Image (cartoon, rainbow, N blue to C red):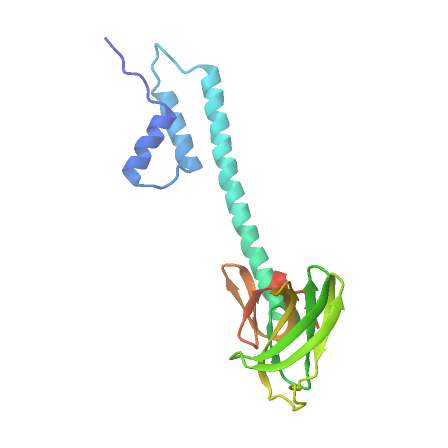
Length: 218
């Protein structure tokens, strides 16, 4: 009489997944399947010791991965909560961030320019939010590296500019071509939120930046 071979755990796992949908096999189900296999093994062809040890190792791996996933999920939630609470302390503070626009709230604006390479004619243009030119400042020759600049809030005609959002563009002309440089501007944090990029600082000028991009807290 032919005795049907006992199915492996992999086969039983596949059958269980087909019956119950895409759910993963947990450690309890894995152990139950392994015990069932031992109880129903072919007496003429029992499982070998090394096969049993391999299945125990597989069980240990499944349990370890499950515990690790739970630990990582708990750590991630705790870190996210901690980062959000820390970022909340920034509300109302001014921060320096990589942006070319900020809010003129007093007598002027200042920021930094990342001069990526030495230039003979660094220039700064101040425009309104709609792009109208307000002031053009010639900073002359500059070595490579970060440098600070300031705008007194006045137009080219010497008149005080109204309060509001302004954009700052830094550039130099090289062989008739305009080469732009990155600008960092101060802005006030009005709120914080959580997005795809992590914890975001929402600024008074209407932009949002990940908190890890904050260069300076003022």
